[in-house]
Length: 244
Image (tube, rainbow, N blue to C red):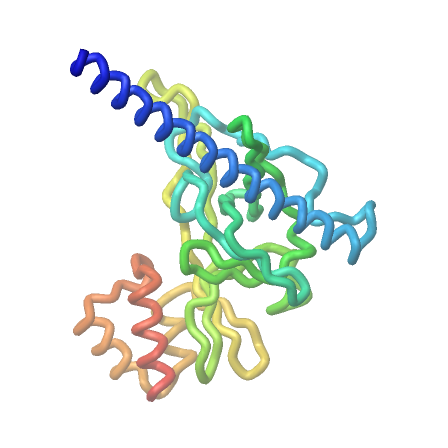
């Protein structure tokens, strides 16, 4: 009888834990859905029912079976904060497709179903994804179509990285659906009210003339290869250039 009672107690405890977990998941999903609806309601009040944050389209990957993926940082949903005309929306989850330069918003329902919604680039001022800040390109230079620059430095000048990925239709028995190439990164400087593309080490040296030798020495000492540099290395290099 004692064994049966213990089994019953354990069973009840497990049932309670499952109920709590299920309730928490539903609340979490509901809070995400409520936040997305809040974003939609806000943009609808500003832009009207015909011009919404959401384009009206569900996101469908172009090459879902390809090797690799078109997203920056990760193919998983990432925590983000959206900035829309001075209003901040925290605790949303997004993916950043750098092939098409689009932000995809996750909307989750209590039943566990997930919608992937395309956001309208024209209405987003900026978005912070996992600690990375992305600024709408049209706010940097109005002649550029809406997309996103990653802002990595803000001092005597502002520095941005433009990330891009592309799909290669390279088919083989081992790779039947093509593949995504390694992302490419281009450095931009906003200096003296001009947006400048810095495509090479030589162009960087020219811009910060006459300090070429000092910059070259710094890059060698810190093992910074311009075309292979990651965010942290660019930040370190640009901070040094700014101090010269």
